[in-house]
Image (cartoon, rainbow, N blue to C red; front, top):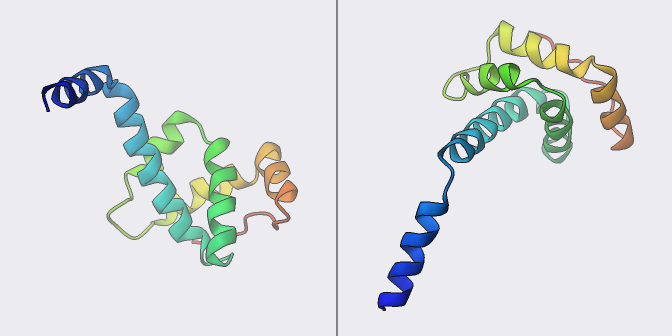
Length: 106
């Protein structure tokens, strides 16, 4: 039992607090974006489109999107998603997945 406990303590010490925080932010932003995009795409496609959007979001945009996790996405959040969706790299990603461009409206 002692080696298992020591291994767990070792693994805990190896956790990078910034990586944990980034993971939480990314998951929160993903939740927000999916909930907006399900108005345009069926759920599985909304998940795929969300990946394209988040891959092309800046860290500041990801943080901004994550802040809406516990509430209904407002017009600023929808505008941010639409702006990221309008980027050529996002549109290329969407097209590669067989999806139409992001066309969310507030």
